Length: 172
Image 1: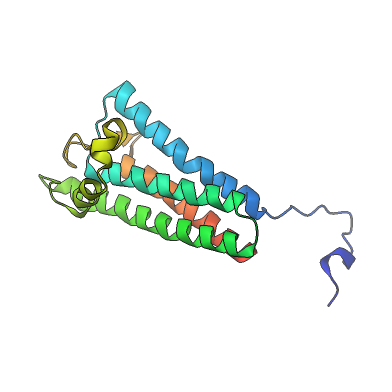
Image 2 (image 1 turned 60 degrees about the vertical axis):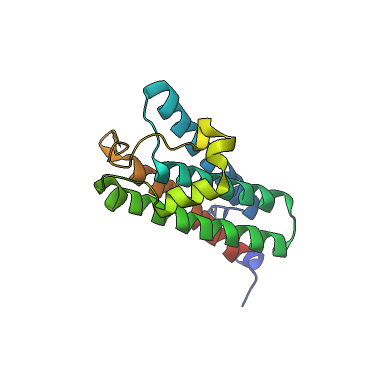
């Protein structure tokens, strides 16, 4: 079988496949953009976060950190470790967003749920309350933006991050 460079192009330009670096860059920027949007929603529009919201913020931070690690840690091993961790976290974030919408938002209290216990154990709600302190119940935090539930927007971003990191794994 001939190598790709030996194949005739017949005058057609092929779209370049995304490189691993671009995928990691996309996944490094996306979560921090999501957190920035959440903070604007919170402080400019008064949309206070629930325990699942702040857990999703924490997962976004972790995904962004692993994506940055993938950018700086050269080599196949580094790319695979970073992409694997970011993929697993993105799937966890997707699951948390779905749980928030379909289960937690329909309950009267989010107290002592898994999200509340994780955030309390991390003590981030004490260390960085402006970002990680849950201020309302999940039912009170159930809002739509342009008719789309906020957790669905988060789930979409988690899914995009997971897809990009799986693609990076395939390219590594």
